[in-house]
Image 1 (cartoon, one colour):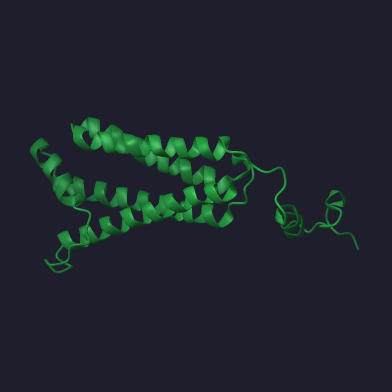
Image 2 (spheres, helix red, strand yellow):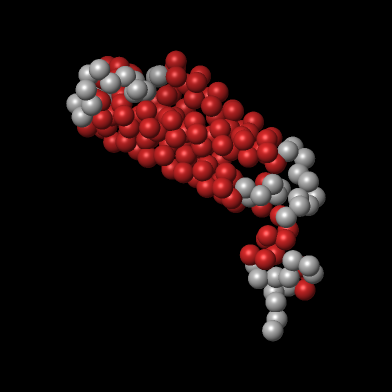
Length: 176
């Protein structure tokens, strides 16, 4: 099960990385920093304008919201990469990086849903809700899928890293 759990974390890391990247490229394209022919963009800047312009929300407010969303997505991606690298197959409560990454991601999609309501953007609200529910499902899987009592090498590596004796971990750190 640790492989499946790590794969879930890898999915979120890769997906959020792609989302943040295409949003950055979309912003650069909108600023004219990329050629018109460049197509590897999200289209989210144009969509935000279509939703917020009719409500009279100035572009001067739309831009920082867009940049903030990208920063939040990038932070989420980095935290998921950290979770992938540090995951040890322990119970979820002991996987701090995983809990932090999932929490930041849940907060992001919660914020998007609230903003969707504020600006009456009902079409993407369903997508944002589905991503939010998918993140909750990921958390439930990480929590509920069986965790082996002791994975070979895990305890020994953790004990050595803490300065203990891998043969007799109950003795604690080495004393000379």
